[in-house]
Length: 146
Length: 146
DNA sequence: TTCTGTTGTAATTTCAACTATCACAACAGT
DNA sequence: ACTGTTGTGATAGTTGAAATTACAACAGAA
Image (tube, rainbow over all chains, first blue to last red; front, side):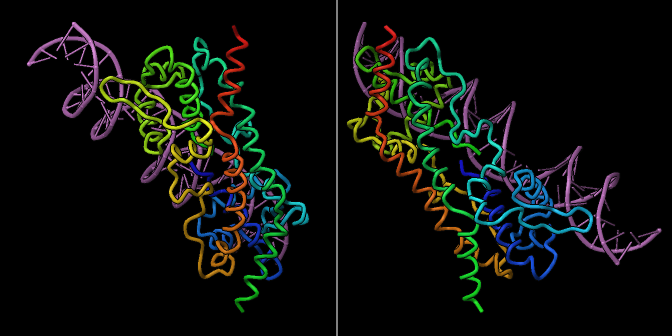
């Protein structure tokens, strides 16, 4: 099972907003065209990002913008905004291990802290990368094109 | 999207094999009962673990065992054995970003190494935890019960 | 050899999540 | 009022997970 593409689309969207905001109105249509997904998918994504304070979206007149400085938006923020996993658990645990078995009734005590440790390693790394970092790479690459 | 429960079931299975191997024949039926999943699920899982050299399975007479010393089985080994994601990519990237858009045609160059970095952080952590480590906790917890 | 218990695997089913898509009311600015 | 856009419900197709049934292949014991 892979992490859904909502995450990479969300980062794509943020980069695109920042890239185009001074040139034109950034509509869901524009973003959808850039990522090559359906505009409705973008709108729903923007709603999730908006709830997390990562973007602002103008109803009616239209247009999306970033909601706070890019240095203050980490990849973890984006990930948490668009990956609504219950309890925030990365690993899906088999639901009902057998309580009558010594292994079954202890497996959570045995494994949970290990899983947390692994998930934390991943989240720590995500926390250390900001959209500003990613945007810097984007500017460089797009700049070199011209 | 969470990582499928095959991973936690696989670890559960290895702990159970090690816990019961000296007392009785460890069949898919026994393992299925401990994890409370279908025996066929266990058999398929054992096949995946077997291909990775993590377990041995006796056809006919029946019974599973670990395939090498527990110190030499890392959680990453188990994870890779049972999570057959194409290319081993943790993140699902949106398939066809728009090549006509400066963001779309650079998004992979912008993001891929970041995604790798994150995945590596997770995998490094998994590589540092062995089944022997987990088994030590299991023995302790199960021992304390008595 | 036949019997028994088990594995290996195909086929089928149920279910949940992803993603695409259509439709349209709510809304803002002209 | 008109136009373009957002916000959101509803629906559909696709994919993968996990359960389940069924049974041939197999190993060892009787």
